[in-house]
Every structure is written in structure tokens, then in C-alpha cells.
Amino acid sequence: MKKDLIIIFVIFLVFLNSNAFAQVDYVLQNYEKGGTGFIPPFGGQKYTCYTHSPSNLIGIQYWSIPPVVRPGQRCRTVIKWSVWTNHVPITYVNYFGDWQPNTELARGSLYDDVPNPGDEYTDSFSFTAPYSPGSYRIRFMWYLAYYPIPNFYGAKDRLPHGFSEILFKVE
Image (cartoon, rainbow, N blue to C red; front, side, top):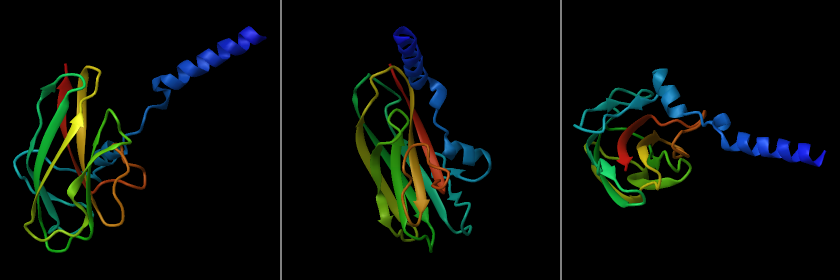
């Protein structure tokens, strides 16, 4: 009896540590449905916010990050972006990494504030690269009004109006 309980417990632990509880990526799910818009990470292309008027535009001029880093390396990234609009409400910009999805890497220079037409922002922050080799993503999350996005994957009731991603490798 005791041996059977131990076996069941071990199976339960393996189940908990498996991908049985894989996180739903609500941001990508909504993007695939035509909801949340993708903001290209280079070139300053103007993206129209899907839930508001066509004059709500945002674009990323550049996003710099080393393409390949060492495990545990301290890295710095710089993002220059602009808002071309005349009536965006309070805006939240924050950044998350997929290797620690529930921890905000940084808040944007526009966070709980209202942008002016033509404003440019430069966000820069440092982070520690993951210790395991692989490919990783950082997400720029842009949300208008009320509250910031809570994590890398968003939530059913909290999705960004626009997002961008940049990839890097740990080798």
C-alpha cells in the first residue's frame, strides 16, 4: 500500500513537471484571430491600433540586442519607438521575456501616461540571459487605458493592443 502511494506520488510529480500544464499564449492566439496587432521591430512602420481610430499609430524605429549571448550574460537592449496620434488615452508599455514570463523585464518610458502626437521614446534596460542554451524572445507590449499587460502571454481579459518581439540565442 505504501509503495503504491509512493509510485502514484512520483507519477504526479512527473506530471506536474511535464508540459501537461503548458501556458496558453493568449497574445499569439488573439493575433492569429486578427485581434492584437504585430508591430514590426525594425524600420518605423506605422501600425494602426485595431480597436481605435486609424489615427492611433505606433511604430518601432529600431530594437538593438546582441543576436547571440552566453548563458547568464548581462545584456542590454535599446528600443526606439514613436506614437503618431492625437488622442491616445493613458498608455502602458512593458517588456517580458519568455524564459521568465511572469516577471516584467522593464517598463517603457511611456507607462501610465498620455503621449503627444509625434512623441519619440527610447527605452533601454539590462537583463540576465537565461542559463540554458536555446532561442528566446522578448516582447514589447502596448496597451491603451486602465492597466498594463500582466505577463508575457497576456490573459483572456488582458491583451495588448499591439506587440512586438525580438529573438536572441543563448549558446
